[in-house]
Amino acid sequence: MSGLRPKIKNKVAPKPKAGLAFRLKAVQLFSLSEPAVARLIFRLELDPLFAKLRPFIRREPSKGARFFLPLKDDARAGRLSPEISWSAYNREIALIKKIGQAGFEKYFLYGDLAFTPEEVSGFTGLSPVEVKQVKCFVFAVSMQQHGLWNISNSTAQVRDYSCIANVVFSKGMPVLSWRLPQLARGRYIVDFAALTLFRKSELTKEESDRLTELLGTIEFLNARQLIIKRLAELVVVTQRKFFAAGERSSLVPFTASDAARKLNVYPSTISRAFAGRSLLTPQGSELALEFFLPNQRAIAVGAIAGILEAHPEITDKALAEELSEKHNIRLSRRSVNACRSIASR
Image (cartoon, rainbow, N blue to C red; front, side, top):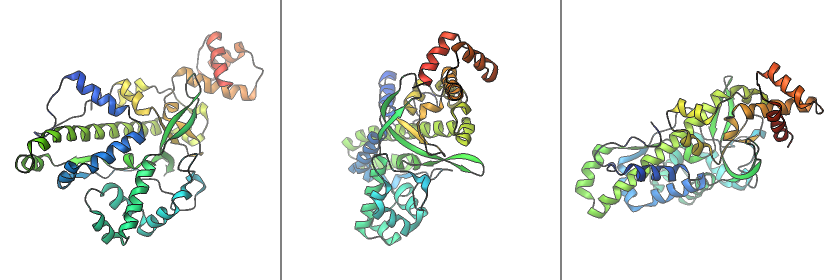
C-alpha cells in the first residue's frame, strides 16, 4: 500500500475522484482518535444499508496477536485506564469467562457480523440481556482514552492517549496483545462479485449511490487499521532490546521516516498513525507510541539521563566526551546543554 490511498477494486467500489478530495478523506480518517473511530464503526454497522450487506461482508480474523482480557489474576493486567479499573466490568468479564476467550473472540470480535444476537445467545448459552451487556462492554473498551504525560519529545505535556496494546514476551520475543477491539478485529472482507449482482437487483437508486460512500469508508477503515497495526508490530521488533531491559538507553534510532520506508507509506501517514496512541511495556509503563521512534537527539537525551543519574554534577564538556566515547553520539556542547535540560525534567 502506498501512501494513504488504499486499493479499491471491483465495480461496486467508489469511482475515481479528484486526488485532493480523495486524500482529504483519507487524512480525516487517519487523524481520528480511537474513540472517534469506535463511534464511526458503531454508526456504520447500525446503518440499515450495512444491515442489508451483512451476507456479503465478514471480518478476517487477525493473525498472531490476541485481544487482551484480564481473565486471570495478573498484576501486569493494570487498569483499563488510569481512571477506570477492570473491576468496573467484573460482571461482563465473568460472562466472558463463562464462554471462554475463544468463544468471546468468535462471537463478539471476529464473527460478530455473521451472527444475530439471538444466534449468539443460542450458541453461547448467554441470555439476550447478557449478550447485549457483553456487546456494550466491547464498545466501552473501544472508547478508552486518558491523559498521559508524554516526555518523548522536546516539550513535555499531557495529551489524550488510547493504550492500543500490551507488549508481552512469548518464546523470548516481544509480541502485542491488543487492548482495543477495533484493532484486535481483522479487516472487513467484502464479496464484491456477489455484491455487484445484489446491487443491481435489490438496491434502490439512492441506496446504490450511498453504497459507494459506505464501501469507501470500509476500505479506508481497513487501510487505517492495517497501518496502525503494522507500525506497532514494527516498533516491537525494532525496539525489542528496550522491551526486554526497560531502559531508555536501550532504544535505537528509528524515525517516522524510517518506519515510512519500511511500510511503504508517507511519513505524514506514520505521524498520524502514532498520534494519540500508546503501548504498555512488560515493565508496566505506558509510553506514547512516538517514544519508540526516536531520532539521535532523543537517544542522546536518554543517554544523558542515565549519565546524570550516576554523575549529577558532570560538566557539559565531560558529557559530550562520554556521549562520543561510549554511545557514538557526537553533539556540540550547546546541543548537549539543550538535551541535558530535557533529561533533567
